[in-house]
Amino acid sequence: MVIDGETEFVGSLAGRAREVIAQSAAQPPDASVSISPQSNGDLLVQVGSAQPAAVMLAITEDNLATKVGGGENDGRTLHHTAVVRDFRRIGQVRNGKFSSTVQLELLKDWKLQDLRAIVFVQTADNGRILGASSLKLGSLPRGT
Image (cartoon, rainbow, N blue to C red; front, side, top):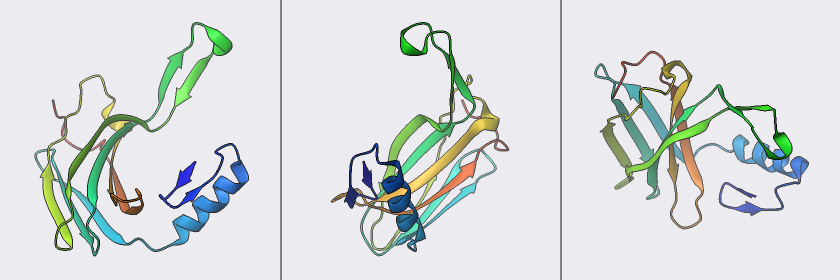
């Protein structure tokens, strides 16, 4: 497991994972990230960062389930949270900022009330996350 592009250890060490995640989360972000819904269903994404970095978008869906028909989980129903439905780079921080209107590409079989847009800013050298923000999409107009 790698936390914040800096700390690496065996992922089965749950206590170590909680400790390192808590330490990382306690640090102030190095980038400001805002997501604002637009009246047409698009998102306005604005980032401020002293470091050049990629601006990434993930659309996730909660409350999904899989009925397993074989293997060790045969007959069980597995419940899923934050399943990534869309993942893309939407830009690059240049001269300390990034601003763009992003068109969402939501499929009709996705449950709008369970969708969330997550924007994060990530360095290219080690993958460190400089800042992030999320927005529940349930109240936005439906896309494609």
